[in-house]
Length: 527
Figure 1: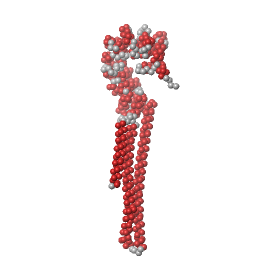
Figure 2: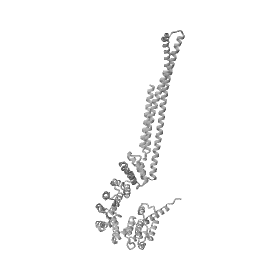
Figure 3: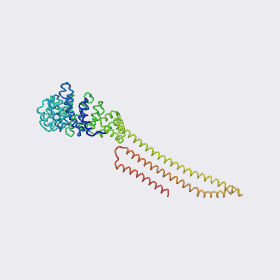
Figure 4: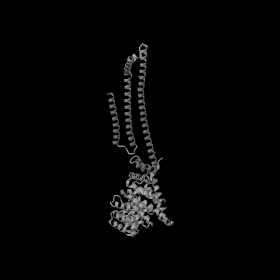
């Protein structure tokens, strides 16, 4: 019995809670990403209950102090951030998260920061009053500046001015960057770009890069942000110890949907660092979409003479494998030859059940296509052989008739000579009169009984040969049209009505031309 929707949602909620409590950082990020989906597939009330129980019991501030285990505080930060995202509409969880924003209830500054971040991300309606209170009274800048940035995002001019001032001061710059990573503000983008362009290897540069990635693509400042991120990527190539910053810049280009950065990201797909390749592939998909991204990769692989197909294949594995295999299957059947070959190699490098099925289907289709062509060629060859045999038969028949009439003529001559001698005549008289009479009789017999039928047979053979050759030519042209139609049908893109009509016109023209030739030949034969 299949589980119902309620059971599935409960299982998703339990999986998210386990991921947030677990030790794997990648699982924590995935769990948080699942909470920002437009339609959360988890049982939200159950998930709230699971998170509340975990924070109150195993991951409470009291337990962290008792065991002197900072990991408990780190996990509590994740749990509070996630709870804040889903707290809207629930008084208990909202009050609980707001309580943990203040230092009296929560000694861990990061737990307070992420609690406020969760409320902001989740669009909790009470975040406005909380942000105003924190901006005015909170002493920890990492929390107060986040609250100020939220107010700045709501077009609060004094709050915007405070964030800009904080960005220009070294002692508060990092706190302000942490704030605009959550709530971007248009007038701060130029300041952040200047920090990135300085190229210093520190936390401020990293957070500035992450903040630029949060700029909405439709802002006019997005182009400037993309330019700074692009320059960072180029500048940090060949410096593997700075790949963390470079990875953040690549991810930011994807969020900005900067189409001009697509060639740069394609180059990054061949990097030795898997993290760089992963972010470059995902960013390329965000910018171009899966279909165009795969097409660009195939073009790049084809231009490199399909060398390093394994590297291109590893890059494509970071995309949606099923959609990628589907697009590679389409590209194998269309476009230039070198791109079709590149698509085939990349599909084999991609691996997986979907890619295997695509390759097998392609192989089966080609085999069926080859078998059909072989069968058609065999039929044409049989018809041609039959035509040759019929022509040989007619030629042999005419030859046999010539031999028979020659033998008959010799017999008649010998008989007439014997008759002349038997009647008392001489050979001289037979040669003068008998031979001419015999030849005359033989000529009449030959003309009546042999020459005319022989001529008719030969003309019939010639006419039949002409019709056969004309028919073979008709079949050949029809077969070529059928080849082209079948080859087009093997493509994954559907045929348009205009294409079908064009193929129908080709077949019609072949038939009309053959009928016209047959009529002309018949008229010539009858004339």
